[in-house]
Image 1 (spheres, rainbow, N blue to C red):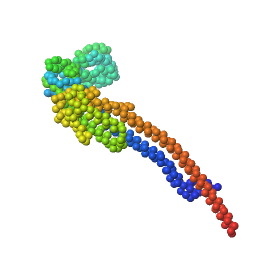
Image 2 (cartoon, rainbow, N blue to C red):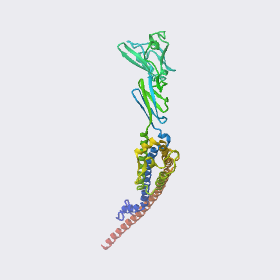
Image 3 (cartoon, rainbow, N blue to C red):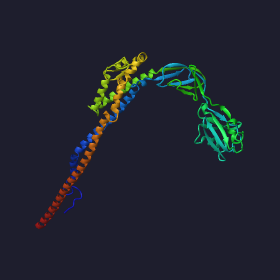
Image 4 (cartoon, helix red, strand yellow):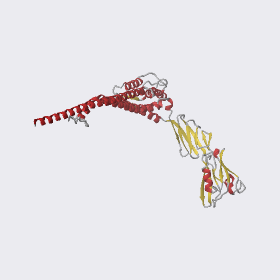
Length: 445
């Protein structure tokens, strides 16, 4: 009997193509499954884009959702050559006379000049910065001027002093500088075990004790007077003397400090709120016309936001009930707009009402919207639950695909076995026919 090595040899038919066509029909349910998978993945991506816009909207609301967020202040110095300043949310408006009578300085000591900077003695240097000190051992490996400098700078327990070398016409000097300003960071040096037998004279290692060094600058504190009240600071940056205000002293002299509310920053926050709202609405419209058409989650979010804007209920601490009364309106197309002149005017005339309209706990528009957004975005929240549902559907599709693939493999194996059997039978019959024909031809002869 003939053996079939290639499907279709026995019959002469294109059985491979026939099997392939049959399997394409069998795979149609799998193709429909893959189409569903693409749709679900597109919906998950759409939710990702929507969450990004929603997060941006919530970020914009944070600058309006609490009363403290409206506490934006700016400070100015009449003469910034004398001092500069900055203010945070703890500040209050006011005017102050500032007199800088002295600036904080670092302690800076210089040794006498050395013409020969090698073999400067051995022993131990004890260097104190304020109340904290560290010790440096000087021996034959590091008793040059450069070696002493490096030993000080590389000390792992260095408490805040930097050593350097200055070379002038007279020779090279070791200079010690405190890292921080103020009298509490004064530098002092003592020596023990000087190899010349004297720990205080001007020769050997004791040449570096305070008594034998020259003060380039002496550690001093900054002293400023605020409306004739004296404030002393180890730094030229003075914080806490005026609550919420930082003063940076630059030179001695007098100037005026003004603290004012930064209404421009508040107006900018309102505009950012409107922009983020408009971006979110555009995203909702885009997704409802796209992958999330008729999605109940978007409908729920849109309805809840509309309920907030249309509430019109009284708000504690505010004479306003609607955003439009504060210069924020939504036109017929759904776009939120800000009347900058009206907002600026209200910040001057009725600041408390404006603030509470947005930020009153549980009542202000931004406060309520921010709470809603928390619920929408939190773990197991509205959007998270929807995404979990979509991912669960993907898992189901994966399992269905595995089962289908296994069934298709079995089906293809069965079809191929049937066609192989048919091909073999036809080949066998053809062989027998050919044999009979040859026998008949022989009988005729």
